[in-house]
Length: 170
Image (cartoon, rainbow, N blue to C red; front, side, top):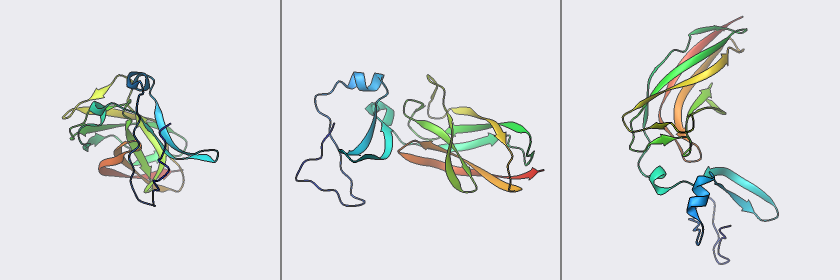
């Protein structure tokens, strides 16, 4: 545990950097360790975030949706695979270990739909990657829209959202 010093209090919207001393970073990194806030004896709170090496967080995130094959009309009873090509326009390398993922917004809301990078895949600056949203099902209401946007989980959404309007036929 990294403890908050007794003489420190953090007001809403303040930032505090916790420091871990005398820990085996190789062990933490190789075991994909996550950190989360805890009020001892009460509950865990806030979003988990991965402990990653400095090289994984160095750089800036940037993305551009290059293309997608989302159908404009779908049937409510069928499933579809959608392929979304995204280019890394930042200076950081995307990896699953640093939790770079494609976020699928629906009707302007992030419901937690993600398309993850496979373990071992790296998308370096300037490269593109084709994400596959498998088994998309058209749902009611009859009109919906999806938006595709990259994110680094627990850090930031980045790149513009690419909106696609979809009509569901019954």
